[in-house]
Structures are given as structure tokens and as C-alpha cells.
Image (cartoon, rainbow, N blue to C red; front, top):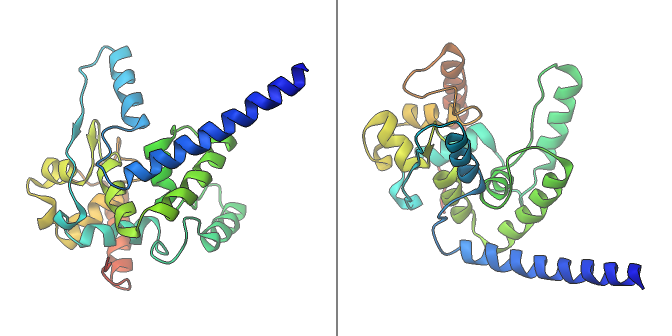
Length: 227
């Protein structure tokens, strides 16, 4: 009887989670994302550390962003973004091959997976989080357009200490609206995405400049996204 009761509760828990996640993802296809788990974690870290709370974030539609920025992000993070369905199996195979030969670990997360992690989940790596990440990636691809996925991505990713989203990053580092971003500026912003709390677009290290040059080269072979 006890086992049956536990199984019953687990079943109902799974049903409520599935329904709740479906509603959550569907709502976020329509409205700006107000806050993310990562933002909450960063605010708690600042509070515990006795630092001033800092949150600079302003929503911007993708039509208010230079097309060079999504192009640079696709070039840097997920070149098959427009053709895959949330998971890039070719990229996973290439990453596994590289990881066998290199001491550096290469990831293969798509932009969709990064959105799933940033918007719905926690940042720390684990197999449990990866399973939920794949689940939410499937739902995102099911309910959202590629344009919406990119719009959310550009608004929620961390681009510095307390800086989130394309509008705030562009104004902070380049002092103009995101619509005016040049190719070079967009490539710089994309270059620092893997380590935004250490790398800065306005104080470029040799490594960041090397990444920028590679991203610009990749951008030449990719068409501007047409949503």
C-alpha cells in the first residue's frame, strides 16, 4: 500500500509538472521574460557577499536589434541554429571527437538549449539538469519560432557583472542602441558570451580579439537571418 501510494503521488507529480511546464513555455512565447534563475542566483550572491544589488536589464524586440548580432551569435554559438530542432547531433559528434584529443572540454549546446537552461533551469551542470534541458528544448522548439528563440536569448544572457541582454550590453559597452551595432561590435559581444564576467567587449584581451576575428570570418559564410 505504501509503495502504491508513492507511485500514485509520483504519477500525479509528473502530470502536474508536465502541465505546468507546457503552460510556462507557452506563456513565454508571448511575453517578455521578467527574470531568470541565473539573475536570482547572482542577486543572492551579491547580497550574501555584502555587495550592492545590481541588475541592468531592458527588454528589446529582435526588430530593434542590428541583424549583425544574431548573425554573430549564430556564428559563435550554433551555426546550425536555423536548421536543427533544438539538438545538434553533428555538433555533439564533433565535440566528442575533439574531447578525445584535447585537454580542453568542448560543449555542443545549441542556442535553444542555452535558452532552456537560462530561462527555466539552474546554471550548475548535472545529468539531471541536462535531462530537463533537453525536455524544455523540445517544448521551446515545439511552441516558439526561431525568431522568438533568438529574441529571448538576446534578452536574457549575461553580458557582464549585473548586465543582461542586448540593449543593456550595447549601451554599456558601445554607448548606442542595439540597432546601430556594427559587424565588429556584434562579433565582440558574441566573443565574450562564454565568459562574460571576465571578458569585456570594451577591454579586449588577445584571446577575445582572436575569437572576434574567427567569428567575423564565420559571419562571411553565413547569410543574415531572415525570420
